[in-house]
Length: 179
Image (cartoon, rainbow, N blue to C red; front, side, top):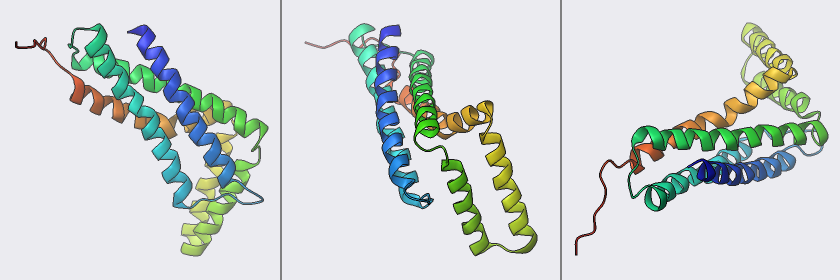
């Protein structure tokens, strides 16, 4: 099981990291950051594509190494470990991309978010939103904040996919072929 989890976690991590890198570099061009729905849709689509490897890993382990049997707990645990490995690679990749290629990304992103807020809010509501954006920016500038925010983007998706995969793929009884 350990080998299966590591291999599929690394593959899922490579896929989601590639999606994220391409999306971030495309969306952060020139002096602006695209805060529209397209980069977010592509990013979450990449996460879902990567996390399909959770299904593949659990099914492969169940059918090929465990005689067609896997309980919910073991399947969910496998999924969580794969999601954690993939999410960790995602965080490391984003740290490399952010620090080396897009060091001003958060400044651009926050400026774009403030401009969006100005278009829809005014007065105290606008000031409150600007304060929230600036606080988030300050937290993101710390190593712990950076890691937590980045894990918060991807890990919940991995947990959800792990839960669904475990529910769908669990089996308690040995499947016997009838001749």
